Length: 213
Image (cartoon, rainbow, N blue to C red):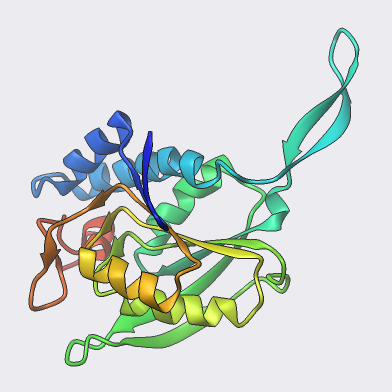
């Protein structure tokens, strides 16, 4: 079941919530965290791709010929916000292995909390395709807004943003800047602290995925 609030979709499926709880625990190892992120992203991808268009092709079953639905994975572009987005990207690719993949490298300036871009590499055909932008955290929302600005310039048919956790401030920032972008998350947490971290959150997603400090 997914709860909808305008453009915000909170995926409250019990399996999603269970795995998220395990990821939040501070004593969860890097190895477990990475595995859980992959499983959780795959489960969430089912909801995010629920309205993907299908076309019907003629196939032969062992019994007879029929028209049957298929998705066109090539019409989907997955865009990972580096570096932490890669963990979600792998999970979504489990569901749509045919998708094209782009990367945007952004880091948050610790003084201004604004997003600074250092890498941008996209598939050549983004125009008129559906884009799913992935990053584990929607904190201040500045990085995601910057990423959406860059992707929108390429003329995609639609953009969805998928994250594990969101802060109310980040949701508001993204909705105000891009009211047409659908947001999918497993939870909206209480607030951001002074350093732009989500509370109660799960710490720094990148550090926990890669075992860095």
